[in-house]
Amino acid sequence: MRSPQQITGNVNVLDAVVIGAGWAGLGVSYWLARRGLRHSVLERGRVGEIWRTQRWDSFRMNTPNVQTVMPGDRYDGPDPFGALTRDQFVALLEDFARRNALPIEPDTAVNELTRENGAYRLTTSRGTLLARNVIVASGSLNCPVRPVWAAALPTVLNQIDASGYRSAADLPDGAVLVVGSGQSGAQIAEELAEAGRTVFLATSRVGRFPRRYRGRDIMVWLLECGFLDVRREEVIRLAGRIPPRGVVGPMHTISLQSLSAQGVVLLGRLTGVENGVRLSFADDLEANVRFADEASDNIKRHIDEYISRAGIDAPVSTPDPAETVAMRQPNLTTGSLDLSGSGITTVVWCTGFKGDFSWIRLSGALDSVGQPVHDDGVAALPGLYFAGLDFASTRKSGIILSIVEEAPRLVEHIVGHS
Image 1: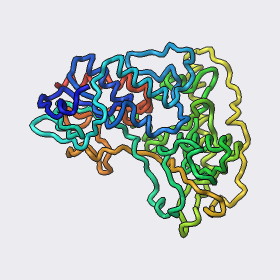
Image 2 (image 1 turned 90 degrees about the vertical axis):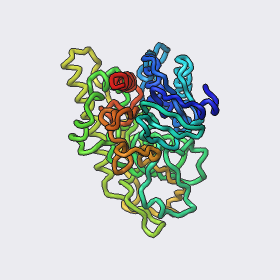
Image 3 (image 1 turned 180 degrees about the vertical axis):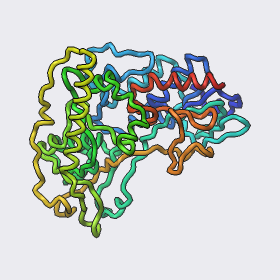
Image 4 (image 1 turned 180 degrees about the horizontal axis):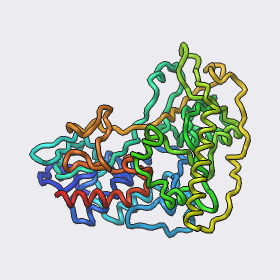
């Protein structure tokens, strides 16, 4: 690794600069090195910084170990269908970077990306770099989003985002309201219930996958049957938008019914705050439960059809306890909830994320809401690329196993257009 002085004094134009040392940035760096391109990987903190600082203590990957691999690697351990913890995944990234001697510049935040004289100029916390190509791999899901009326809640209420949650023990005494029943919301609600906390969950319209089905991990089926290869345009056509990913517990199936059986009080979608003391909810709890059930049924039917078409000898399906348990209905009026009367002292916002690309000062690089304009990760501006974006090309995009295909494709585009 170079010193700050070496970075500041480097007036040569690099072939490429990668921004971000997560799985996407490291995967691209691996292929840049294989093609002999002189480059640097700029990381504002440490390797895997977002995974270190924006995941809770008990977090586990949703892909099985056999799929949680980096380019050029394969899993050969004793637990192919286990799930890495947060710290194990960070260790995997560090090991990958070390083994491949990737040119990582830690503690180097990019403050501004501009273009001059045919090259990209990166103004960083440690100096300035010039590059012919820039691959932005800083993530499109690193900036939490809250509803605008969150500010109307009482200031005494402890409000945190999913990225700020670490454990039940870190929260003040009292009940917890988790807002959003997607991947993070469902897992955090379950952990809080297991810790003995009183938990309210404001649900949302999110699908669900069983963790295992017909003898295999669900992610293995989804990859093999082509579900994850459905193009972004087709997903939008079917759903009218990019939908949130279906809930799949890292170790077992998590359903709204199973959460209610653990004591979580299920509510409809949170719609607003009344006079700063009462929360209002939509009358859509049953619809949200039904939507998740139907999503699970649809994916199982899709896999059944694939098994039949491919002539695979797979076991018959067996009931999943999380999907057969009866749902407990809340003993309260679901349309309204008094904060003080319910004992809620903390709200955990699991209401989505977006990417922070405000430092990109390039006309045409971002759309009207500040998100990347691209086609399969290739920007309209020559030499600018985006790696690791959620749903960038297919359903697989944004999941670690996508970088095995995405990184060489982007690097070959760089080579072909240099």
